[in-house]
Amino acid sequence: MAAAKSSKDGTEGTASDTTAQSMDETNKKIVTLLQEDGRRSYVSIGKQIGLSEAAVRLRVQKMLDDGIMQIVAVTNPMDMGFKRQAMVGITVNGDIEYVARELKEIHQIDYVIITAGRFDILAEIFAEDDESMLELVNRHIRKIDGIDRTELFTYMRLESQRYDWGVR
Amino acid sequence: MAAAKSSKDGTEGTASDTTAQSMDETNKKIVTLLQEDGRRSYVSIGKQIGLSEAAVRLRVQKMLDDGIMQIVAVTNPMDMGFKRQAMVGITVNGDIEYVARELKEIHQIDYVIITAGRFDILAEIFAEDDESMLELVNRHIRKIDGIDRTELFTYMRLESQRYDWGVR
DNA sequence: ACTGAAAACCAAGATTT
DNA sequence: AAATCTTGGTTTTCAGT
Image 1 (cartoon, chains in turn cyan, orange, green, purple):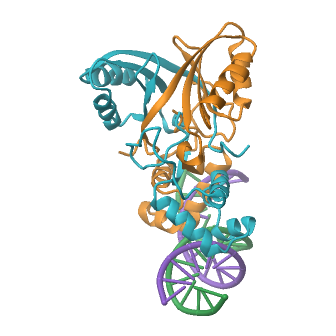
Image 2 (spheres, rainbow over the protein chains, first blue to last red):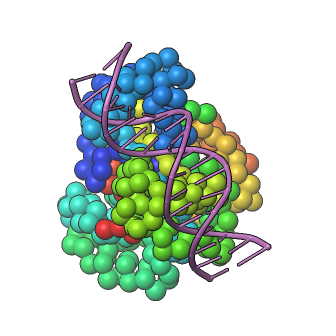
Image 3 (cartoon, rainbow over the protein chains, first blue to last red):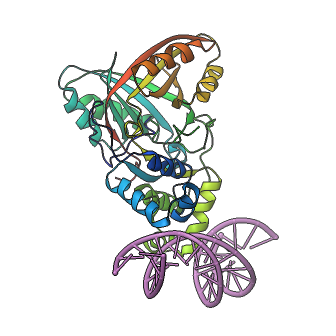
């Protein structure tokens, strides 16, 4: 999941945080265009939305600095040699935030969310093969203090992944 | 989830697909650098890995064309005005692939995976507010033919989202 | 808005496999 | 022979004033 996050390495505010003020209509348009092509030139963006190159550049720079937007390369983990992926549903009997922080430190976890519902936490994990996935779950994740139960949802097929929500 | 996918709009192969041949060590290095900064210049990448600017540019272009990599802007949905996000666990009594295809068409769903485990499908959804999320789940998702049950995991906090797996 | 500097682009030609 | 890389020259974009 997680097509969607901004801050480089975690610790997002709660759902009730104030939404970023700087997200006016112009910035949304810019983001939209960069969602299609992250390397699109400032000139061409400016032309499209009727703004000077410099104005676009400053806005983009500010959004990057503020951590509101990132421009990154994304690939299919499969293509990068990670043959297994899964979602782990976790129930906690101790401190949820502590567990979440610990999970965040594990390299093979790219996505951690605290949820309401049957699970306290959902985490997306990936591994080279079954063996390494088992080790990850059994030796690392389940060793974290305060974890009650884990439930694994192995990915069989990633059917769709979209970065352009709000666009289409 | 889903920090990770390549093809622009879905339909990925199964987990057993052959992994992309063109992903040699050089390309991996390039991807790694672009995962940190998607607008990094070809010159600087080339310098880093000992290749000419043109060579890097051609490789990047090829990876983009082949759909192995995308360079995109990513933002926190919260900043874009979507105050609610959730994972939906879905069990199907009919054709799983059909349901997955239908889900893929819904704009407010950015991520659909077919899984093994208690749920047949996991989908990440987002909405402006509670009302629109309720409508999405109740009027759209649950109306799809073949869906048995749905279970909602509302996001309380996105703890971490990483795009640089394989790096650190 | 202007300008020098940097980056991207393109077309051959060279090199590798 | 096909694919990949380099080089040199040109155009476009960038970044700072």
